[in-house]
Amino acid sequence: MVDFLELRKQFPILGQEVHGHQLVYFDSAATAQKPQCVIDAESRFYETINAGVHRGAHELAARSTVAFEEARAKVAKLVGANSVEGQEEIVVTAGATAGLNLLATAFGNASLGRGGDAAKRFALKPGDEIVVSKAEHHSVLLPFQELAYRTGATLKWFDLTDDGRIRSDTADEVITDRTKIVAVTHISNVTGAITDIEPIIKRAHEVGAIFILDACQSVPHLKIDFHKMDVDFAAWSAHKMYGPTGVGFLYGKREFLEALPPASFGGSMVELAWMDKPAEYMEPPARFEAGTQPVAQVVAAGVAADWMREIGMENVEAHEKTITAELLKLNDVPGFRVLGPLENKDRIGTVSFDVEGVHPHDVGQFFDAQGVAVRVGHHCAQPVHRHFGLFASSRASTGVYNTVEEAKQLVETAGKVRSFFEV
Image 1 (cartoon, rainbow, N blue to C red):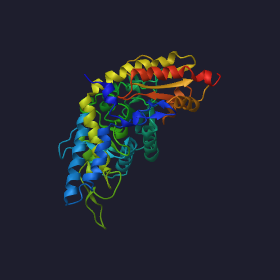
Image 2 (cartoon, rainbow, N blue to C red):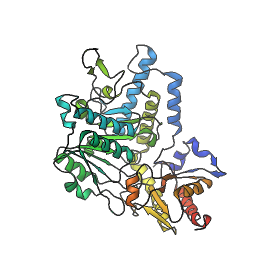
Image 3 (cartoon, rainbow, N blue to C red):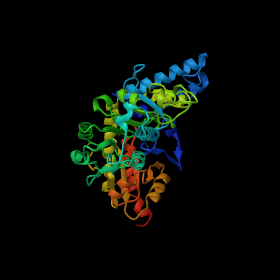
Image 4 (cartoon, helix red, strand yellow):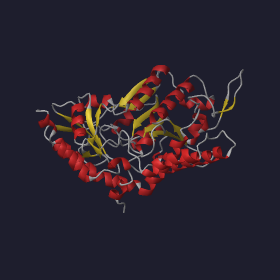
């Protein structure tokens, strides 16, 4: 049995007051706070073994490299990926956005003939299709929209149900024999809805398409096993899973990583380089990790991954479900409308809402004045807001440190918004 009240004490930032009120943090979908063990891990790296990895013969370099690769294995274990040396399936990136752009760029390079015969499975041409959805974060939509422009492929998308869920039931219609890539979110960062991805993956593989998952909002909240899910690629960020900023991860089936051409070029990703002929690139994951890596952040992310596994993701899911039940009561506040599923099922505690007659930024400032941190804006997901007839919203999102009492405080505060603005 996990004592989440005791767990909360591991987050030093939550002990402060904001505007004379005890801080209540409901913005974990943007970035999660860090437990002391993660903060200490990053600091300890700099204090004890700071050095470049895979590029030095001295003792600090050796220790740093070991710590870096051990962290990669910890992250792999969290998401059900392979971590055996020579068969690694986790690539270090600067974040989920960087990972998704890596894929789009690499597919574009394959479309130019780079990577040889093995990379032809990733190549696109006019008449081919790329499928996304209206629920996508811009970090999914824009890279693949640009890839379509560059290659002449056609961009298609899944529509949404009235409550904002991706229409998985239309997979057989949306995904055709011309579809080469399907990229969708596992959980919307606006509605909190968990996508029924199984029929989408099944249909994508039936037509030979590559399936890419945006796992930013699922890795911190659900028990994930990419092998069981049979996804081809997945991207997520460390800062949403209680790790540091500036680092993320890209999962890829080993056979795909071995066939994919590189997307960025520089040190530590090349076996041999000449002036008069093309370079020979290293095996993955090194092939995709050009330049100096954010080693301290990766090491700390490994600690975060172990910390999450120790808590148990099924415990995290159960805990957050109780908080979500309270947050959904926002829909009962006069003038408030929750965007997304109103039933506490197949969703997480990311609850966006519109307040009649009050701009989301004003809503956010009112909450902030009461010490409650929420997100405002379009959350880098404009199409899904347009689905609800809006341009922006306010959003409360849960983490392991939140309590039912905090959720009740948020809903109580919500009841004062419209009267304060004399609506």
